Length: 244
Image 1 (cartoon, helix red, strand yellow):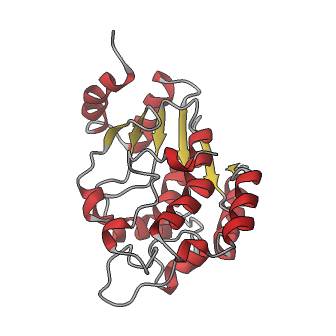
Image 2 (cartoon, helix red, strand yellow; image 1 turned 30 degrees about the horizontal axis):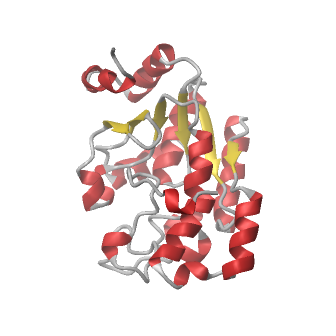
């Protein structure tokens, strides 16, 4: 019996023949009410939001509000809503899980060990994402190949085993300079932290500016070994040891 995963070869062929907007339109027609885009309001996500909102594409757009975001991220969120006349959906952590974590381990437990940090990421990001993608068949993301060595090994369209859906990365082959130029030419709001050496922006306690010559993601969880620096949103690592 054919599965959703079997659609990937044909989708890869089609995306090579279409513009981004045309391909998203095809996805929405083929998988009605089942296409979702997760935004964190970074450069890439703002460009994708522009494609979706300016063309009024029927894509469900949501963000993960971890409760620890930078003020600048919230300002970018608000500016995006105002520019396009939209209200971006929010996936928030489960109240009881956050309350239990803070009561038992305090507000900064993620600095103490990789396990603690992954527990915080699970509660604030992974579990809310699973809820947000529950009915999605297509998950659009802002991943680009040049963001990290691990991401360069991905495909533009791939299967996400954890969420049992197809992931599509519209800007996978774009360079950062191309995205910056696109944002400038279309007057798209973007996070001002990018102008202060924050190329990758996550939760405020876990993100710092990068120094000259450092890797794109060096400012994320900078106290950890580089090989461990993924929160789990874009890996197939099942984290059931933190079940809520």
